[in-house]
Image (cartoon, rainbow, N blue to C red; front, side, top):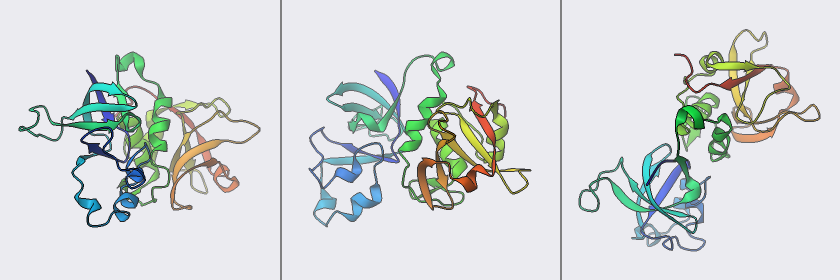
Length: 240
């Protein structure tokens, strides 16, 4: 038995691995599930399908009891269901919608593990102060992705800057963070994930982009480079 948490924005708990209906339920599957697109594609009959048991939100804990052909039989411990299992609601989830917590966090933590978690939010709209699949901001994305892999960072970008170890530009690695400031660079106003080592003068990043209005992964554009303050690496236990 393994502990895990939901990595997708929303994960649908299914009665069986073969419960998802071909095509109709595609938007509910995968690490970048889109609950809005999925529901928009259902008619009245489709919304009454009993192959669906419940839904789990990003970061929700589960116990994995069995893994089979890319699926995990789980118990959703945050959703009591005494008539089914005293530990929580039982059912099946796609394995790629989970982050497995395995080993001692003190030795197993790797900042790069937060990157695929953050990628699950690609395309989600940018909303200042948002922290849900319907809208998220830059520091909210960083906060949630690291919380998913067992590290609690501050909520705001400037506090995240102070919670990270400085990394010399040119030495950044996936899982590090880029920090940006205003015109005078006197305060931190934006943050994003490093997703690849810098190459040919370009820096690749994943962030909730206010200018673009959504979560994107891109080569850092010139206007963003002009406000780059530095890079940082998250420690296992950042200071309060």
